[in-house]
Length: 392
Image (tube, rainbow, N blue to C red; front, top):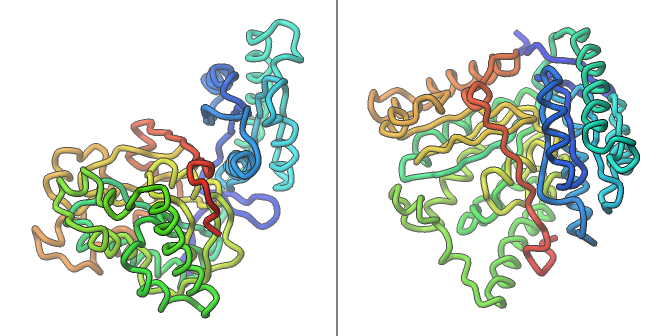
């Protein structure tokens, strides 16, 4: 029997599991305008950020790629881009990139509209409502899981994460890959100490060397800055939760990626070049990481949390899973899957894996996650210029 989900067909062979309208600000100065438009457009999301002007070189390219990647994500039906007019992250340039996906895209700049922001908001609402009306004409159809890109995330990990929730996610990630789909593991600073394990899983020597060189180069260059990154990890929250070393944390992190062969490494917010399991360069802040996964084309994200994290993503539904019984009780409104039964009720990891798989299918079919219901729509873009050296 073929495993399928009901999704929305997009141009160029893509498939969405949500059918949203994006109101995207090209620059921080018009965030309020984008937010006000979104309030009046059904099934829309406002993508705002503190950037868009003054960035240059690799930093500019990274931000432009991320913003346009969010717009081209298959969960988005169409995009309305709001610019100011004097910024260097031009609205028309973003529109040109997103239009390559063949989806509906409109743009305008506030400075070009007589009447200022009030008139601009009215213009955006008119465009957005028309786009939203068109989107309702599209109906769900069956697709197999070769069309799915799954993001793998963790946040607020503790001593139970690596032996409960994370291995369960690994089983589901492997299943997506087995069905011809794609899975992405970010958070490269949380691979430290497990490089040799990941290198052995690489599909060839070139990929293996890239994994090893990435970690060694990162540690070497931070040392030149007078920082031993291994002293920064685990974080205070991880330590409070019982993790003692970065190696212990990393073993839990990579368990989310199951046992599938590693096809390669992609830069932050870049789409994988093929199917299977991929690694992404991203330094492990939850919201930055999930923003990068959404920009890379992931339609769904599974996030494990030990200490508890409410974060979500406006583009991708985030399925929240926890393996700590205390956290599952205290933050149950934020948790979709309780993996703590592995230790409290001696339930097999494989059985919880089936529960998670069913929840992923239901989410792909339109069931809302806790983060969606509660309205957590968090965006943050990783700034490459924060690291004064090249990682690739």
